[in-house]
Image (tube, rainbow, N blue to C red; front, top):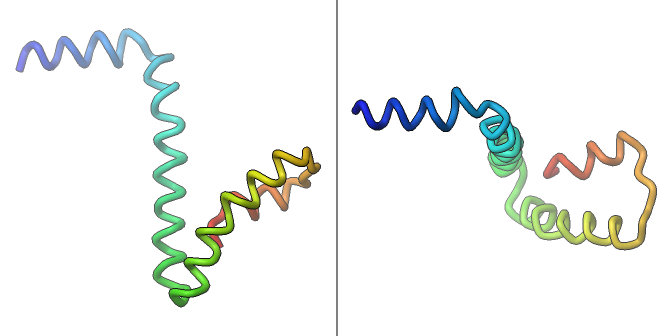
Length: 81
């Protein structure tokens, strides 16, 4: 137990920047998974599958073509609906 506490102290408390670097993407991933769960519970199966499959393709094409996105469009791409 003492080794565990010292390990947490060394890696989290004494290195807060590294902790933030890991926790921010983890928090965003958690929000995305919760939104996917809400979408799966509120949409029918076919609509949900089409949206989940096509979303990465849309993001890739927009980045590949260097298309300018307005802030509302960026938000629409972030939400899995």
